[in-house]
Length: 114
Length: 114
Image 1: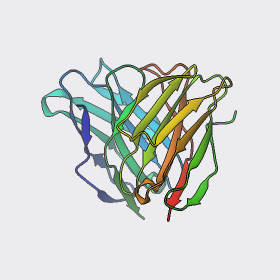
Image 2: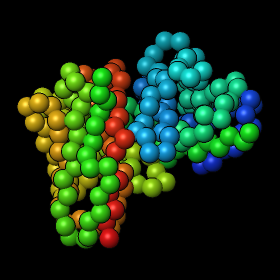
Image 3: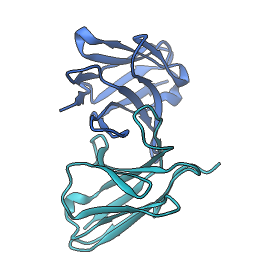
C-alpha cells in the first residue's frame, strides 16, 4: 500500500535561513506526490504537486520540491524562510483505485525564530 | 467566491451519541471528500463522493456513513460515538474528483467526544 513518511516531527529555523522538509514514500510505480500546508484553525492548502516530467517542481509561496526515485524521496525546500511560513506541513501520495483520494504523512511542525 | 464551508465549526458530544457534519463544496464542484485528522496525525481518508455516488471508502467502521445531495453538498454521519472519534473532520471538494485535480479543503469541524 502507498504510504509516506515524514521523519521530522518538529523543525525550527531562523527567519531568512533555508529550509528542507523531508518526505519518503513507499510505492511500486511512479507516485503522484503532494505537499500541503496547514495553519492553525485553517484547512489544508496545496503548495505543489508532482505527477510526472521534470523532477524539480515549483510551487506557491516560493516553495519547491524535488522528486528522487532512487531515494524514494520528495523533499520540500525554500531558500529563505519568512515568519509567516510557520505552520504544519504534510506530504501526501495519491491512493490507487481512481479518484483523488490521498494518504498523508504525520506532518512536520515548522517554527520560525525571528 | 466562497470556499468550502463546513458546519458546525466545533461540536461536543458524549459517547454513544450520533453526530452529523455538513459540507458545502465550492460552486461548480461535484466531488466531495471527507478526512479525519486526529491530533498530531495527518488527515486520513474516509469517503469520496461524486454525483451522489460513493467513489471510495477508507478504512473506517460502518458507524461512519456519508451522502451527497443533488446540490452537491454532503453530510458525514457517525453513530455510536467513541472517545477515539474526537478529531478535526475536514471536507474537500474538486470539480469531478479525478487524480489530476486540485483538492480545496474547508477549515474543518472540531469534534470532541466526552
